[in-house]
Each structure stands twice: as structure tokens, then as C-alpha cells.
Image (cartoon, rainbow, N blue to C red; front, side):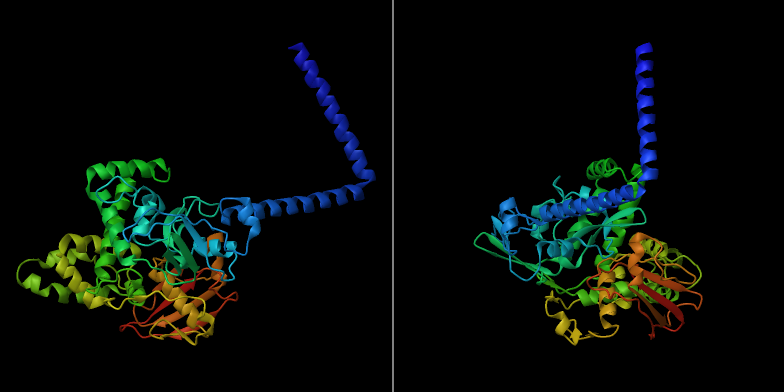
Length: 480
């Protein structure tokens, strides 16, 4: 013990001596020390930048550094994964890229930049099983069945999500969402080689994918064996506190997705490479501007024959919609109504109600390619979207709402100033719409994130008049 004390005392004296000499030197030659510190900081920044670039280079490269150092873009795999023989007989041994003027970093940014799409809790997607099996729904074979393009794990995509799938984080919760690339990245398969085309039309069957995912979520809710495995996997990821929390969210998202499929039911089958995106976007917007009074009116008309026949009682109908102050429906109110509709109304009545309120999206078209968009005066296949002024902002806002963009609905004055890092895109655009749809006191904010490559860099604030229903309100769209 004495030796240890003597050793500590010795080194304390040495440290005090060294610090004293350094402070004396600093007083005499502070200019040299300042220059040394500045050079050290500059060198540190250079080293960290180089390391960051190396990691970025690694992230988008192929399997060897030789390939990385060759290239004009063709050799770089950019995280592309191959698959075994699929339902069409395609079997890929490699994936190549067209020379389109895109760097590998451009492709990876396009694939993985979130736009605020929140379809499902991320932990749910990672744990979901394919119905009838213990295989993960997110497996490459399953997603390739719907023609979503599989990827390897990379720095910007550590969970190996397919092209256009992304983890979106908002208010402490992680969700699975879509990026632009999900619908606008094509691939042609020829003699064992996949030729990938950034910005090209996708070959996906999004309608069947969403229906398949709905079945997987509802199977985890309804099947006790599946639910037990699912809950354990979700809890192991560490973001849920209890079994009850997981089961409650299972119930909520199963109902949401089932109602989404009811609202967007079409007798015309989409199949691969087609989607009525415009019709579905329109329905998503309607979902968030319909008022409680309008819903009550349409609900009463829908079930009048069932009440008259004695199949339903008026108290059953009244239990669907809580009697609250009028105005647009909040998220919690919609969840309650969806739950009660599924419990009270038969499926045919749900479909009739949907047809009274929503548009039937039965006009599927191919996904458009993106590379000549700046040259167009109008966009959308029907030429409805002006490609100048506020037109692009409206198109982009509708697109992100259509792919499950998050909306913050609240009453009171709306500020478009960002309050968090996640809301920094609020500086990009803030659009104010005046509509006749709710009470004068009601302000509804639809919040979503749009990627910087499609958002203007300057802030825009502009009034636009719309006429919907019979009561005035203010609907504020904040695209972040």
C-alpha cells in the first residue's frame, strides 16, 4: 500500500510539473499554440471527411475495391442483391446499372431518403410472418414476388430493405415507409442479369403487396401461435414496453389497413407495373378533410335499409360515431370509427359507405418514368398537374400523403417554423388553403416530409381558394 501511495504521489508531481511548464509556455508563445490548435482542427476535419467519404464509397460499391476504383457506374452494384428463381422463372446472378449520369451515391440517396411515409411500425415489419408460414414477410423472396427490388445490407440501409423502403423516425417512433424509388426504379431481367434503371417505371404490384401485408398483420392479431411469436420478436427489439402495447397496436393497424383496402377496392385488378395512384391519393386527401357532419349524413343514408329491416338498430348506428364538436375528424376519431364500422357494419355496407364518400380507384396505369419531368408543362397521365408555380408542390404533397405521409391534426394557430431537426423541411414550403369544410375555429395541419430533390429551396407562403362542403375552415398543408 505504501509503494502504491508513493507511486501515485510521484506521478501526480510529474503531472503538475508538466502542466505548469505548459501554462508558462502558453503565456510566452500563445501565438504558436493557437496556430498549432488551428492546424490540428483543420487536419481533424480533413481526416473525418476522408473517412466519411471512404465509408460512403464502401456503402455503394460492389464486392471488391478493384471494381470500386474502375468505374463509370456500370461496375458498381450499389447494394443490389440477387434472387433465386422466382414465379416468372427469372434467376439473377448479377445486377448491372445503365449509365445514366447518376453516381452510386446519387442512387443510394434516392433509395433511402425518407419523405415522411409511415405505413406501419418498423418493428412490426421486421417481425411479420408470411401468412401460413414462419418465413418473414420481409424476406427477399416474398418481396421479390411483388417485384420490389432486394438490396444487401449497406451503411445507409443496414437492415437490407428493398429499393424504396425506408425507416422513418418521427416523435420517437420508427415506421416503415416508402420513398420515391419504390415506384420509380425499374429493372429488366435478361439471361440471368438484372438491368436496373434509376427513375424508370417500377414493375411492382403494390395493391397485392398491401393486401398481403394486411393479411400478415391481421394473422398476427387473430392467430394465438403467430401472435406469441410476433410479440416476442417485437419486444426483443426493445421499443415496446409490454405485450398489451403490441397487441393494441396490432389491432389498430390491422383495422387501418383493412379499411384502406375497403376504401380503395377496385373491380379492375391492377397486377404488376400498374397502379391508380391518382385515385388513391385523392382518397387519402378526402379521408382527412371529411367532416363529422358529412360522415354522419352519409352513414345514415347507407344503413337506412338495414335499420328499416331491423338488421341494425339506431343505437348501433349512433355508437359508430361519437357525438362530439363538429369539424374534420382527428386521427383518434378516425381510429374509433374504423373500429366500430368493422364491428357493426357488414362488409357490403362498408363498401357502400366507402363508395358514397370516396372515389373508386379503378383506372390503373403504368408508373411514369422521371427523367424528362423538368421538360413537361403538365404532369400526371391525365395532364392535371401544372408543372410551374405551385403545381409541383401540390403534386409532391399529394404524392407523400398518398404513400401514408404522417399528418399532425390539431386546432389553433399554425406555425410553419421547424421545431425539431426532423421538421427542418418546414423551411422549404408552407401552403395555406382556405376551404369550406369545417368550423371557422378549426385548423387542420397535414404534415409530411418531402425530399429536398423535389422541394424548392426557398420558403413559399401562398393562399389558395377551394370549395368543399358548406362550412368554412382553414386547412394548412406544411410540407417538410
